[in-house]
Each structure stands twice: as structure tokens, then as C-alpha cells.
Image (cartoon, rainbow, N blue to C red; front, top):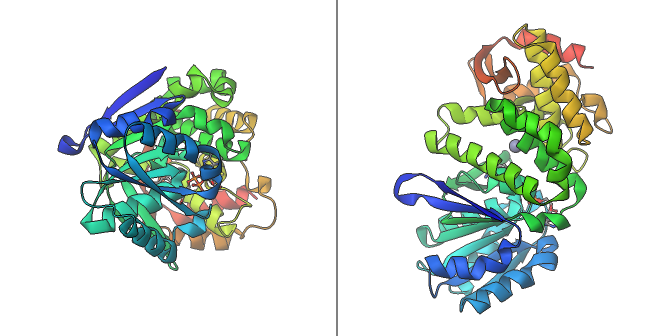
Length: 366
Ligand code: NAD
Ligand code: ZN
């Protein structure tokens, strides 16, 4: 059972292939695009332990030479230091212009390896083999790559589209449940943005999505198609790509407030942020409170947090959160930009949100 989407960005269009067991086909699919290429596999130790031998065997079987470069798992690997190590290892492995980089892992590996591929010899091709749910539905699609700076996350990077995305939905079976749930927040997000029937489908089928099988493939394919469509319309994020930030303005403030620690994963912060965006929309009279309640109920049902009180430990107070929101890039000249909703599947970009209203809302959230 394999689903294939073509992401149309003119000459640089590429396939996103989604299905169970695809890592065993990585060699054949890559060889079909780049016969004889050398492949620099970038992966982290968690993923390497579980999936690297499968990929290496598949590449070898297709007659491709590969070299594996392992990094430590976690956000800390999106650093200048690790970037330097990876690029130098790719050079040492003689990955040249006609060769390619294969990112095998979650969003950290995808962002890091994609940026290394963009920089190496001014750009070598790369293939994404995302192994976390978040990477399969979000970070592997859209061509954003990069690392973090001491000044903030993802501040250094490049737009570099992959030539192929291979999303092996079976590889998610080894993903810790908490990570799966966090990625699921982004899946639900696509329903909440502009696809109410998809959200309703998730309400009915989420257990099958978690369990694996056809429903998981369908959920991931629908999510990828949604992201790819937005990206194709707006590759460089000038217009409606901003809708993808639903839940992310509140979410980023909470993530930062929790120190970007294991206390609150990105997707968990987004779950709270989406619930808040709907509650805020309801309190502003934009959206039926019943829709906000439905959003919260579904996220809760799958085991995601929906309230600040669900986060263990201390979070900043309203003032601190307002400062963090103001530092976020989505602020211009005093007014705040938020993604708000008129209902499930009816999100919109609100560019002139009065900070005083947000402050008052956050006070009610305590
Ligand atoms: P991650 O890459 O750190 O993966 C989460 C954890 O799961 C890690 O410990 C990893 O080792 C482990 N893991 C991954 N796949 C596994 C598997 N199949 N089995 C067992 N363990 C597995 O984090 P993530 O949530 O995948 O991605 C987060 C990153 O993505 C952030 O750095 C974020 O900035 C970035 N991101 C980028 C974009 C983009 O457009 N480029 C979009 C969203 C997020
Ligand atoms: Zn996100």
C-alpha cells in the first residue's frame, strides 16, 4: 500500500512516497533517480540502531555505495559544531556534486542534513527519509533546512528542496509514543486549518492512525498533501504559508517558557497553542465555543496536553509569555499576527491582534 504525491515546484518538483516498508526500497528508488551515486547517510544514534542496517542493505543491493554519518539524537545537534562535523565527514566520504545526501531520521536530522547538502559544494541533491511522525507530515516537506544559533532556533539555514521524500510509515512503529503523539498534533492541525472533514475523520479513526496500517498512511498522505499545497502556493512564506503556524504563536512562547526542554515537546506545545487559539477565537466572538471544546476534547482523547496547567513545572506568567510572544517573528509594529479560527477548518491570518486582548485572554487561562 503506497501513496505517491508529486510536489509541484516547476522543474524542481519531486515525489513524496508514503507507505509501510519503504526503507527496504530506498536503494531501488534512489538508484532510479541517480544511478551510481555515492550516498552520504546522515542519521542519529536512535534511528541508526533501529533502521540503518535496512537502508544500507537496500542501497548496497541497488549497487549504491554509502557512508553513514551518525550524530547524537536531539535538538542540540542542530548546531554550528555538528554542522561542521557533518559537512567535513561528507567531504571526507567524497560526496561530490553528482552524489547525494540521505537524511534518515526525525526533523533534527532532516534540517541538519538538508542544510549540509545545501552548503556542500554549493548544493548537492538530498533525499529525505523521515522517521518521526513530525518529520513525515511537516519538516520533510517544504524545503526549509537549517540549524540553531545562540540567538534562536532555525536562524541559520537555506531553502533546499529534496529530490525525493520516502516516508516509511512502518518505521514509526519504533518511535516512542510520546513523540508519535507530538507529531499527531501537527496532523490534527491540517484538519483545523482548512479541512473540517479530515478533522472529523481523525476523531473517528485516530486509534487506527496510532496503531498503523492504511489509516496511518492516509493521515500522513493527507497531511503531506496539505503542506505541499501551501508550500507550492507560497514557497518562501510571504502569504498563506503562515496558516501552518496555527497554534505556533502561543506554542512557541510556551516552548521557550519551558526552556525548549523535554518538559514540553514542540508538538505538545502546538497542541496547547491550537486549543488556545480556538479558545481565544471563541472568547473574541469569532468562533462557536462548541468548536473550541471539540478541538480540546480530541487532543485530550489522544493524550495531548491542551492547557498550560498540563505542563509539569513552572511556566512564565502572563507578562513573561507576552514578552516571548513579542519576540516571536510574527510581530510587526506593535500589533500581533495570530492564526485564529471562525470554526474547525476555518482558520485565517489575523494581522492586527491587539496585544491587550491577548494579555486579557492569557489571564483567563491561568
Ligand atoms: P527529532 O528529530 O529530535 O526526533 C525525535 C526523537 O525521536 C529523537 O530522539 C529521535 O532520535 C527519535 N526518533 C526519530 N525517529 C525514530 C524512530 N523511527 N524510532 C525511534 N526513535 C526515533 O525531532 P522531530 O520531532 O522529528 O523534529 C523536530 C525538529 O524538526 C526541530 O528541530 C524543528 O525545528 C524541526 N522542524 C523543521 C521543519 C521544517 O520545515 N524544516 C518543520 C517543523 C519542525
Ligand atoms: Zn510545528
